[in-house]
Image (cartoon, rainbow, N blue to C red; front, side, top):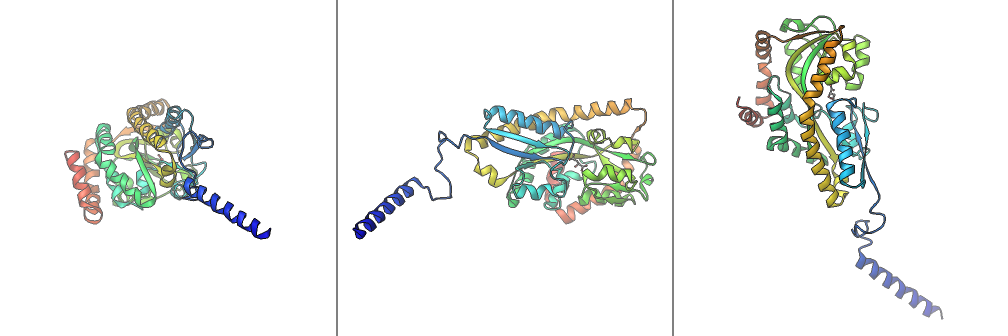
Length: 348
Ligand code: LMR
């Protein structure tokens, strides 16, 4: 009788194992893919962290991305946005993305240059002259070649968004002449090219994290900073630094990234939806970012407490002369080919 039970049990185990093998239950720990299967239709949530205010080119593009993706996927994907560095700041967001603590981030490309030094090409002073060129470079093959470099970090670059041209904001006196910078402490993002600009102007660059600028301004630890009008306006920096010089000396834009494993875990149709929505939002962002900065500038002009002037062409030439060694640095120590390619694309 015991032998009979043992044999029956063994036969049952063999049958169950065979069915399991046929159905691939034990492969990759996942169920066979079948869109109709209950459970797979559950909502997928993307946590998207960024450091700026909602009413900015990046903040608005993130909102648009969430709306359009939810609509396109009939609610299969929901994007929850965490603005203002409420979850992660400049120093922690890339690791959070790699660990899948959040699934998407959009850091300024200058902040990625420690990992990818070639990206400093986008920080070169006075390289870009208009928004059309910026869009052409960032959304074309050149931008794609930069984004592909993220693959070695298990991160997928989805595309670039744009904020605007950077201006100079200062506490003490307006910044116009190259001599005005001597001895100042200037906040600039952690990119060698950006830091070099201010060293060449005999100032001290500080790589303060974006979420700490306001506090450092209150403590009078920063004399000046370079930033876009939308960031200056939305974060209220103009309340503490009342001299704005319109210089357009550099650009500030974002690399939108998604955790690679998370992306690969999505069914193919949702991956395609996400890519299509990303392209649509990038187009929308390039169309609207200039206007957002212009609107914020006119609000600043209405605010009587701020002094606004424009960098004169004569002084611009002097700044360019001072910045020449930065191009030599990029060419000799970073990547001559990237520089040559972008100059050709910009007819320089
Ligand atoms: C900054 O740190 O000034 C910017 O990168 C902030 C941002 O994300 O626009």
